[in-house]
Amino acid sequence: MSELDQQIENRKRKRDELRSLGVEPYPHRADVDSEPSELRRRFEHHDAERLEAEPVAVRVAGRIQALREHGKTCFLDLYDGRNKLQAMVRKKNLDETA
Image (cartoon, rainbow, N blue to C red):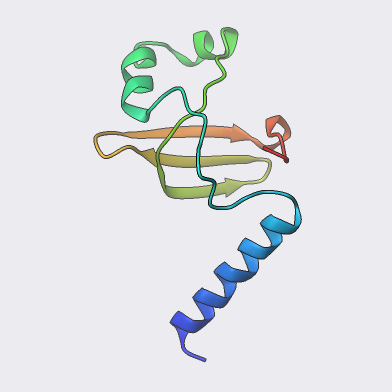
């Protein structure tokens, strides 16, 4: 089996796993309220203390260009075609069903 064939099989397996958990991997619609460029403009002058003291929940549209896992924390780079936004996500704060 070629490397490409293996990648295709892995993606199909992951797709099927998501569907078995009730998650549609290719939804027809996504409820988003922000883009990386907009969030950068809104929060670029906030320091870490302010961001942690005043948490904001957002649903961001963008292409994940990089994903790095470090224990119980993940870092990801979202790109909207204009700007990149790095996000830090604590796994304990994620909704596994969303």
